[in-house]
Length: 574
Image (cartoon, rainbow, N blue to C red; front, side, top):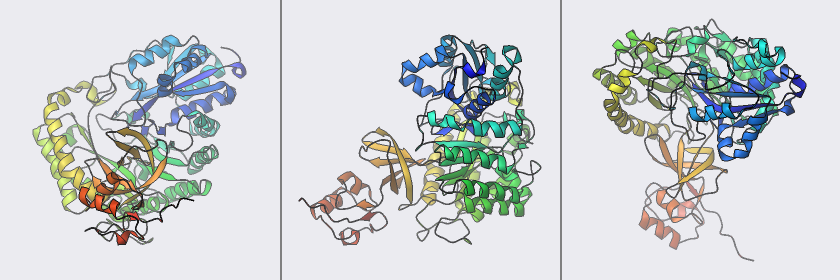
């Protein structure tokens, strides 16, 4: 290979979704950032590194020339827990093959694609991987492989994992690549890694393949945030770990002091950040060390931004399934963990530093709670039976009936990957139970998701900075940046790419309807007025006829509009 100083490199991001790592827009994963940093560390000038997302290549065929002409082409992708995506569409296997065929230079692929790829990015499918016609497949860290192949030549390629010192250097050196992301700077959230690996061995999960937890020290993560902040990133998620509460400890026991250093350090170097969320929290950690866990959760809620979600991997409430798949938390333990997070972090901004949750009811402040648990349920696991579905429903009903809150319930079907225990049985049960699964999923959406969403985000809840993404059926849909953000439908077709504040007026199963906040009754459209609680078509028409108003309170309807509306003086013609 040529001198690194003269090397042209193209990185293509096909997006990743792992148990503890997410990289579908508006998220950008660690992989392209660290790979870019590793290349710089090996001697490649930053200006000779080109980064594209797969969506950019779809939108503009001219960009494929960068793949064709690169001396080194690196593809990054792989979905081991795929779902439905709004901000981007992960690369399909045929597209990945075309990339390899297009590249005239050396080609390499890496990321979770190494665990396998089926013919469609969907759950409950058998997976098999061929090398998709690439010259090299990185079976460990793609960033380490990219560094070694540049620094040592083609014969220097090897499958190895990078250490913390390399990660710290590469994270800072590769931060520049985010400026080439199409969502930069306003609608981009950077996934941050605090650790890899897991001490537990659930049958289906690929995370233990990284070994036992290996933690980055706080100063390493904080330095990465500092570098990304300097490059215009203001949204961050601590998502690359199996359990945020175990950070900086022995892999299982909470270490609140390490969390304090981590979160406090991030706030110090990025005081103007707009989003600071997390992803995974292991419920067994909460119940095994409740007092330390409570302290750690309080630290998180002190520093994070509202609407944060701690994903709990219950996976199944059926004791038989729990036993046969080495699941590490019982149903009763998970319920207790849900209660603890609600108490320590289920309060809403505006309630004071000594507030406790769950914060519900008409007198609750009009913001989302600081941190709530989310429940992951996985179907098709060994031992699943008809009773499994009822066990799951009973657990969710109990959480709701006890007055607690869940930010979301994630129901999916298993994928069987080589190297996991599920590889022996595959996805046969998921296929056998497909019809039962669909019926059960619909029941959960109707009986749990909708009323729970009304509790979490009652009418009048304000969602700041909703980014408008697409139009459908005469509405504009958008989301905030963060972990599992609410999908918001707004009456009318508004300019895309803008951000607006929204007040919630109605609820679906996993989405809400909202109106711009505050809504000006002197200029609002009929559709916007009709969306307000207590205002129908007839009342909306009366409001329009009787305009202008001096205040929202002056509107003569059988509803209190003060949560939602204001009255601005009408503009006068010169």
